[in-house]
Length: 91
Image 1 (cartoon, rainbow, N blue to C red):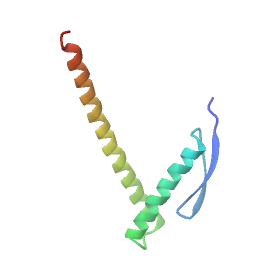
Image 2: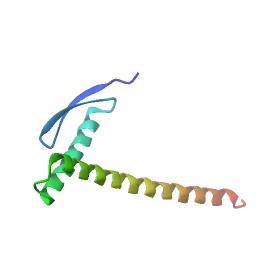
Image 3: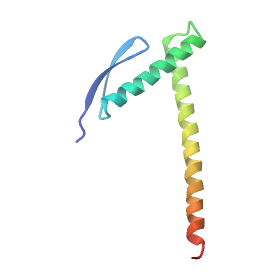
Image 4: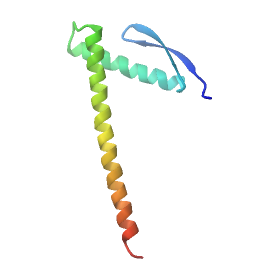
């Protein structure tokens, strides 16, 4: 059974206790990323509520995720094709 870590992080001025089996350093890194994204949106669009900032950050991170997922899928398909071509060549 994996050890559950309990890590306190600060995101956008609020402290949260995160529990998970990931390394505490990784949990803090993820929280810092979310905090940075929220602060960047607030710099560009001041006076938004925290909820709206969080929604915009969630949409931006989801966009990054979907683009990366598509990129990786294309790379895997390319590599599989190359492997298949190599296996089909005589010799």
